[in-house]
Length: 162
Image (tube, rainbow, N blue to C red; front, side, top):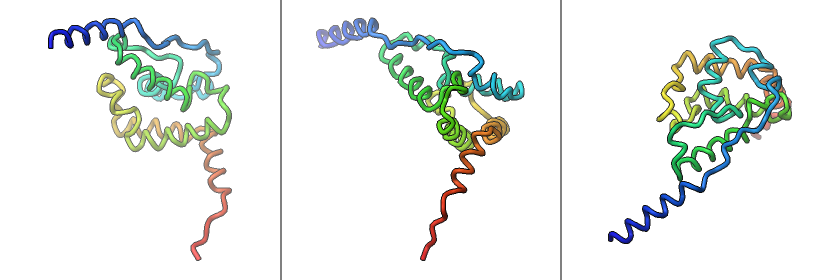
């Protein structure tokens, strides 16, 4: 039993040397969502607090991100968030991707599915109250990309139920 415990301890210690890449790609600040849209100070603060850790190149890695395997789990979430929509590169994203992101963001924020509940466990400052959810969701709905998504949906022929 001691041998198994010792082996697991050694494996855990060795795993600490295998770390994910947490370097942030360089980006042009002029492409950032906040720089482009110039939201109110309150919306900008909410975006930075509730969205930017996973959906930008401005991720602030917490202390527990230095522990393997937690760091791999955190980096996986960051990579998924950036893939879904990187707010640091907003101006360089294809129009269709921006349209999809604003539509999804508005809906997920309203339904309290974003920020992720697992993120909120350790980031209490990112918990949004009902008014903040409404404000942030409304911001995304007000972007020109939201109108593009809306027009695309409206242009689809309605199916009749004969």
